[in-house]
Amino acid sequence: MNFYNFINLIKLESIKQEKTLNLIASENYSSLSTIIYSSSCYINKYTEGYPKNRYYSGCKIFDIFENKSIIESQLLFSSLFSNVQPHSGAQANFAVFQTLLNKNDKILSLDLKSGGHLTHGFIKNFSAKIFNIINYCLDKNNLIDNNYINLIIKKEKPKLLILGYSSYQELIDWKKLNIISKKNNCYILSDISHISGFICSGLIKNPINYSDVVSSTTHKTLRGIKGGILLSNNKNIFNKINSSVFPGQQGGSISNNIISKYVSFKEANNFNFIKYTKQILINSKIMLKTFFYRGYKSSTKETINHMFLINLLNKCTLLIEKILEKNGILLNRNFFPNDIKFSKNPSAIRIGLSSVTTRKLKNLEVELISNYICDIIENYKKNYKNQIKILCLKFPIYK
Ligand code: DSN
Image (cartoon, rainbow, N blue to C red; front, side, top):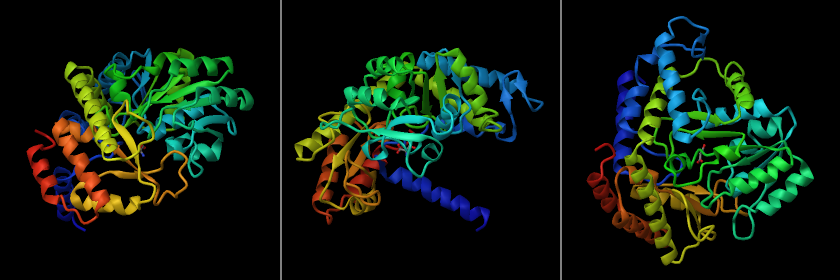
């Protein structure tokens, strides 16, 4: 395939993104400035090491950027220390494990089926291959059960407790869980990848004071480009984290992305961003309410963030995902807590409202889309292609 074919493929993807409504909870549209800054001449520059301590020459100007990015992320998340070099959330989590744990140490985490993440101990992931994973599950109301975690920590004495999830729509009691884990000499990693945008807006409690380390991606509710960050208030731990990221795990950082991360932190540290995340919450609550109104069940009675699960136990979620895609609506099938079905065709769909809120869809449109989705689930022959196209035209991604 020659270069021009590639350009055509990118054009096709861009048209597809413009013409579809994206409800994938882990995605968002990066802001234009963060995209532009990620494409700078820093693509050409290796910057191994840290500011003032590099292993390549010619990094003096970049030191200014990395320092700014570090300071801006500390301001945004009220943390004393920050590392902006992790290439992704997975890499960030690995750096934490490498800092706090030895081979075969115990990690206590929520399993993937109940809302955890691959890197929190999924059997095929590095985390389960290197460490000894113990899972906690949700209670009968699909909520984090602090008492159960207390019991299991006392019994199993894990070295690390992971909080923060990929499909959990309720509050986490960081303070209480911190007390429990400190009593049992257990570290806490809070993985806020999905909810970081709400935390820096003050809409969800910041776990920084209740965690040994906080990890996040930068491209979900935060609206930056793809990447990871690590935050902490513990100097000792953080010095070790720094050497765990480099040279412990990564070589050169992705310099152009570090500059772009700075831009996203700056943008998130702004009143307009708070307004934006508030609207995501409103949209998310409206959509869930509409599903309830239509008789559907979620894992809990409400959502406090951008996402929620809808249980479609008797339906084929793989097929529903495909039919919705044909109509121009993108989302992903997902496990429901205590799912008895397999990952190819689990019981639920996961819905996230960040991307459509970025397109400035509000109450009316969100209610309309929810009804389209319900109609399609109830009758696969329903066709809303044109309605979705018109909606997409009315709400372009970058205007
Ligand atoms: N797989 C992503 C999610 O859906 O949460 C994060 O890596």
